[in-house]
Image (cartoon, rainbow, N blue to C red; front, side, top):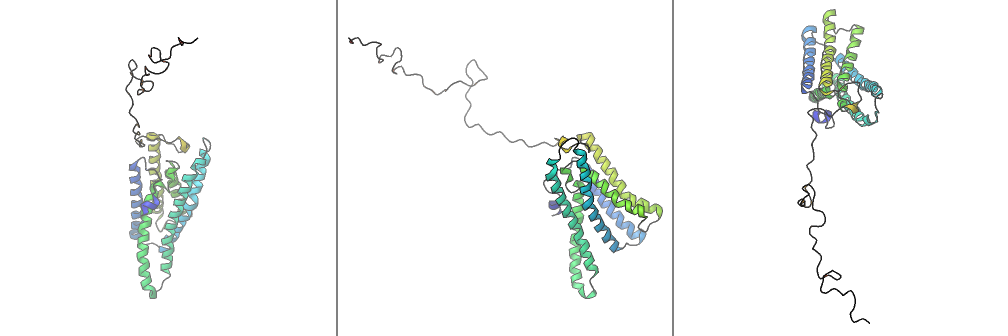
Amino acid sequence: MARALFHPAWIPESLDPSIERLKRIRIIAGLAATLGVYTFLVGGFDFTELLTNTLTAAVVLLFLTPLTVGVMLLVWRRTGTVRELRVPLADAFKLLLLFVCALAVPVLLAWVMLGLGREDLGLFLVLCLVMLWLVVFVFAAALRVSGNFFGTGAVHRSLPALLAVVTCWLMALPDLITGDLKGFGLALGIVFILAAPLTVTGIALLELRRLKRRYGVRLADHPATQGPFPGLVLPVPAPAPAAHPVPAPGPGQPHLPVQGNPYAYPQSPYAQGTPGSPYSSPAQNPYAR
């Protein structure tokens, strides 16, 4: 279900599958490292703070992604028009809204669960099952959108890498500026906060480099200059069968069909007015006066 919703058919497949595998490994390793470090080094984390950070991330995605795309549209307008990009941009924005809603629903549900009392134990258990399904669904959706970044690859092949870098750094910089080291010491806190943006930046630079060297795709180039890419072969329709058989070439002309109607009968020797016909009218009546 997550694949059908967050990786629809209009999103082009990645040109480099190895980069996609690195992105998925990064997400899984980052989530495991975050939970592990918080659990074993810090001794747990504030659940309400986690909910607040999740809502903050959703708001950042909702406003930062269109802003970054708008800056790139100004860059691309120097070398071409951007009217033809309206349809893929609208589809990408719809996908962004869908993911933000999917991210916000379990957060709001968690707030409701925190307000339940002991007398609502049955409702609490039901909501726990729903929450478990929503967490798995959002995680699967995050794996999908991490590669195509809300379908922006349909606009420009290099745009997902740029958006991932900008979003990750914007989420990390406030913690560094405010000194919120999540309960760690100075050195460990800085390493923990910078690990995610540095990893995302490294993978994004590798992706941009491969797109440039292997396929000639540059971020500053207009999307209309992309493709066709090597290895992506478009299907060629089979030729339609001929309605009538082609006649054999005529003598002396091996590459040309027979001229004229090959099924026409020769002129009848008994036709009126034909020279030499015994039934043709004489030129002059011998009995005429």
